[in-house]
Image (cartoon, rainbow, N blue to C red; front, side, top):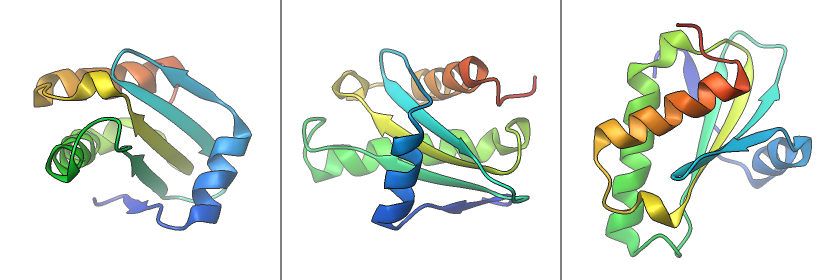
Length: 112
C-alpha cells in the first residue's frame, strides 16, 4: 500500500473503537478516527465467527486488496478499522470492494 500503513497494536485498535464513529452494511463495519498525518493506517479484524483460518485469511486479503486498489480515492490522515461480518463468507472480490467503498462514502472519506 503506497499511501498507507497497517494498524497492528491493540492500543491503536482500541483508540479507533473508542471514537465510536462507525457505519455498517451487510458485510463490513468501518470505524474511522481522523489523525494529523499524511498517511492512512488500516486495520482489519475477522473473528472466528466468520469461519476457519483459511476463510478468515481470504477475507482479510480481499479487504486489503480492495483498499489497496482504491487507496487514492480515500482521504489522507485517518486510522481505519474494518471488521468483517459473518455474511461476507464466500463473497466475491467485487462484492467486498463494493461494500468497502459504500462504507467509505457513508463516512464521507471517499472522493469520487
